[in-house]
Length: 627
Ligand code: PLP
Image 1 (cartoon, rainbow, N blue to C red):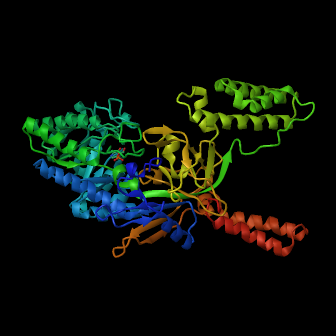
Image 2 (image 1 turned 90 degrees about the vertical axis):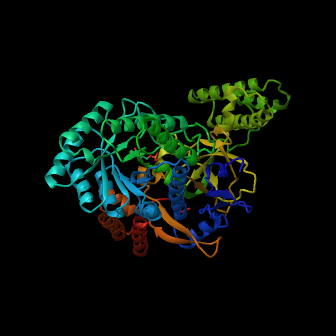
Image 3 (image 1 turned 45 degrees about the horizontal axis):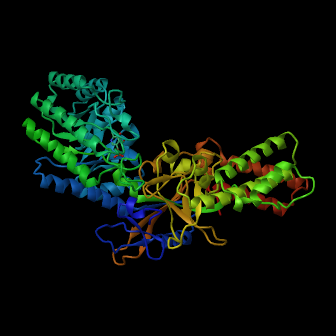
């Protein structure tokens, strides 16, 4: 727990069991429901599903939906706020059909709706959000087709709100609505002067990509008035960025947003809804701080700041409390899925060594290094030992290139160098002060655990924006982890690695893991991947989508679970098709080449059939390694 901080970032959904395995507790109201990851892994193997696998806990999705809605409801009641909460889930955060279906189903008692930001998403939400009492909010840039689809939603009796992101969209919407004779519900997105805090802070501020300036908002209201459509203007929206790390940003945004709402009301434009966008953050690193991968507040505090912030301003200005909408996506989905994969190897810079015993006529560079190693115990200035060893190694490399020392001498020098570094590492572990250069030692002597997955497919944000995601071995947690590691994936790209972790409150480049054992698989989980990661991944090196299993708990046995569905990941054929290949034609081409070799006697006929079948099997197989 101290190393992996599971209870810090787990949001109550994950913990380390007494048997040393990670357990999921997907139903917070019933902590007796515990699902042991080891059993999940066994079940996955029995089902014949190959790793890596995305494991989805649908109970967690349901629980997060209920939790957000209940928190808003109880805070509204406690604050004697007279508006209601009508949240929407922004599908862009995870558009997987099973995810959206589960959220819609869990949200039905709360009239929880959906948000779309593109035409494809709009087509999706029109089909999925069938509850006439919930909202469908449409953000993003729009064209004529987009507007017609939105108005189709109105025809179907849905509360579809078109949020105007730029002034020209308003003209298009009004024109289309008049042509079709359908009353639109219109929202305006305000370009906020307050900026969020964190990686997405450019979503706010004057240079923000989306939204109308105050002048444009007033112009919009007046234009609608002129067109006899003032009562279509129903919603004010703002969004100052995802993953807000500091609660002060939420407070500031509420003050600014509430002021705009109140003044519009006083100008004769009484809006029904204020939509505060997304931004509710996740504590990825478990530090509960303003670190970029954390946040210094809870869902409860966030909701209280939204509700009370709006109430105070409305009461001061003497305007009614509007209904509140939020578009939290990350907070709803992040916890519900994780990637489970196997470590398939270890890479270590100092793992190979050769006999370094003295030989006649050897170069004095080698002699120097050996002497340093032999006299290590009697040395008093360890920093000097480090500097000397590093210098000898550098000189040896140059000397090798200049044909002064042999390959074998260079290998001996390297072996002795790493031996000295390992001893220095042990020595400095007891010291309080470690010189800066030597702080790298832990990293350079650490292992790289080769992980059967692709960072670019499964954890795109760790590569793109240094997002931190918790990594935890799923078993053996009652054993002390003694190997410092970073993780590398199986792509041919040196960026395909994870070397940022948190231990306690410290960000580190290595994470202690357990030594690999022969004949025993070692599985790790990459957690909190349910928001954005599931859908932002790409096919670098043609590693495709992962197999997925959907886990549900049994009502009658709290320690049991079942795999409700297996969704097959991409086969090699699938990814090749996307890249415009024709796998069937490729298979017959390869068969022809094999047949030619059979005709010329290079391959015997039976062997030829086997090679042909093998090629075809691989085409229809999974894109990841079969350890
Ligand atoms: N709404 C809008 C307009 C957004 O741009 C985003 C994402 O940035 C969201 C909602 C979802 O935000 P989050 O995932 O932080 O809840």
